[in-house]
Length: 202
Ligand code: GAR
Image (cartoon, rainbow, N blue to C red; front, side):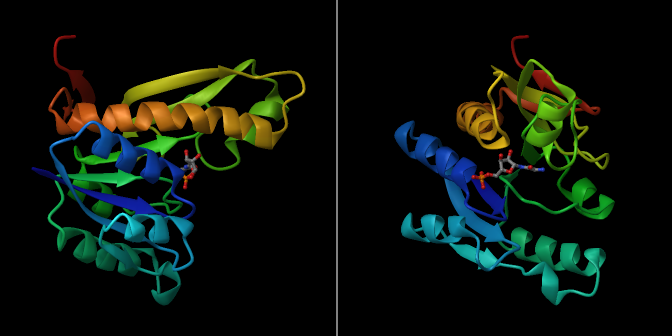
């Protein structure tokens, strides 16, 4: 059984999509823990209701990023994960953290990377007028939002879109591609080799 730890900061809808897919498709995994940097994250209660261990490492309680990441690593490692899934985890991670988990650390980002790394992706997509937007699942590397890409899904940008309508359309696709990418990793079809994604059979 592979052990998964999921990190969230908020409502946790991607986390929920992964939990539901794992259950429905009977993945050979143990959901070891859901950890949030925000005590108020809605996803913590969703995880708790599913019987999954939860923990909070509140970044506001730490003097700096390095101290927070060190404690976060300690808590994550106490659950002995084979995979760490960032699901709306809104923290910039130190290089030390990223290198510690490299090759078993996934993120979902709400844009078609390498377009729009960082925050406010939907707002920026509308401002610049792209006709296609989307979401990306990638391995995390020290270069923020630039790790090698496992999955992408695109959606059209409609002329009457607002940030909210566009975000909702993208989120629907996130809930499709993230569980699929996690399953591919868990079942060994997707690996991180020399900074690139290697996919079996491709
Ligand atoms: C998702 O749209 C995810 O792509 C984004 O935060 C949202 C979390 O929603 N992540 C980032 O922006 C990471 N930089 P959720 O809590 O409902 O899964």
